[in-house]
Structure formats: C-alpha cells, structure tokens
Image (tube, rainbow, N blue to C red; front, side, top):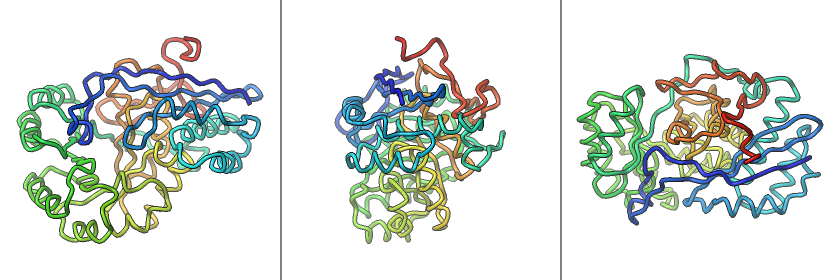
Length: 355
C-alpha cells in the first residue's frame, strides 16, 4: 500500500465563526485540511482529514498520527481489520482515521466497480436530498449580505450562541422572512434555564425547524433530559454524539442527532452511527466541517440514512480542489459526476498531490 498525504489550505468565501470562536473574538478566513491518497494494485482511494479546534484536530495532529501507521497493515480488501489496527495504534485522532477510512472505502468500492452508496447497499435517490446552507456568526450587516448571497438555497442554518444572536436572527429575517431555518447554538447556552428561555424565543418564529446542541456536551444528562421534555422545538445533538456508542445518552437528551465523518472516524463509523440512531427512533442529520468535495461527497453517499443534510462545507470555500457531489440550489446530486465508482470525485485543476 502506497500512501501520499499533504496539508491543503481551503480559502473561505467569508470569515467563519461559531459560538466558541466568536466569544473569543476569533474567526477563520482559511481552513487547512489534510488530503490523503492510498494506492495498491492499480487502485487508488482518496481521503481527507478536516480540522477542528473543538475536537483538537489539526493538520499537525493528523500528520503525526499518519507518520505512525504501518501502511502494510492496511488493505482495501479488509476494512474492518484495517480499522481495528488503527484503533489499537492510538486512541482518538478521529480526523486522521477519517482520512484513512474514507480512502479505504473509496478504494474498496472502486475495486468492486461500484459507487460507494451502492457498495454499502444504500443507493442514492436524485432530486430527494436537500442540504441546508450555513450562515456563520457575524455582524448583522454581514449576516444580511450572506443570506442575500444564499438566495438560491431553500434551507438556511444560522449559527448562534454568542452575543448579538437576536440581532443576527432579525437581520436574517429581514432578507429571508419565510425561509426554512435551522439554528445551531454550538454549546453556547450554559444552563438549562438559559437554554429554555432562548428556545421559547426561537419558537416564536414559525419557520424554525429545529435547534442543534443548545448546551455543552458535558452537561449532565438529567439537565439535558429536562430541557428536551420542555423544549418547544426539536433538539439535535451534535457535539454530544460522536459514535454509535453514544446513542443511549443521546436518546434521553435529544430528538435527533447530527453525524459527522470527523467525529465517527470516517464512512464506516458514520454508517454505524446513523443506523444506531434510526434504530433508537431518533431523527438523523449528516453534517460536516469546512471540507473539500472529497469529504462532502463521502458524506453524500450516506444520504439515504438521513432525514436532514447539512453538507455544505464545500459551498463555503472558494478553491475546492476536487469536484464530486454538487448542491446547486441545495439539491445534492451526483448527476454531473463523471467518475462512476468509489467516491465519484476527481481533481478540478490537476493533481493536488503534485503541487
């Protein structure tokens, strides 16, 4: 097994901030991911390790883990065995494991001559899946500008959980008064009483669909269950749901969960997490970080297991190095993808690993 990997900076269309970064006055104009390619017996698989300060995942942590891997222990023919080896190598490092797992699944599906969604037995229904478009925390004027630019997208997601959230929602509604809206507090409300007050405020807007992660993941289950029983809006767990093993706790605390490949360590773990949530009777959403079309397309292959999609990371960047699943007007589609197997992605302008 041959491996190639490199950090790759993704330039954002707008400065990106969520609750945690906004509270410290921060925001990002560029996010660096790690692109990875595995090759064996004439077959290659692509993967991507995203960055996340919330989960202490960075290009440095990804590359440090990758430097420890004995690549001869990995195989497109044995993904479970390969992942067991990686789990035993070191705990955590979900971003690096995500990159490797996505590349392994891509390669295995290519070997089988199938798209990943068919390799997993899921299929993919065109014209069925719609992603939301995320609006990061900003000034009311910039919120209005971002919403105007996103006029083609029927579902928006607004990041709140920091000072000025009410003004930002008002600015959004001036531009898009009736647009379906999802709200993400990103752990921004610290007590159940504060969270309930804010949920009651949000519920006065008839077009808000649900609210993500109102309180920190470390909040006692009893407090989260208290909030769930009183919330006038459905609650989705994001930072609280990393993998299928968290489903018992999340079933008590939320009406649904947000599954991200970063948290689950790739396609295999996300597949398991989505099935576990559906079995528990929870609504499911597939989310993302700021990512290229490699990882966004990987998430899209799991769309048949999701009630909602928030896989817009590649829509927020100006220089996506790959093309794959598209989301024009919010509709997620592989119709324009010329690659027919694996992740169905290809480089846009030359090989990114050759730069």
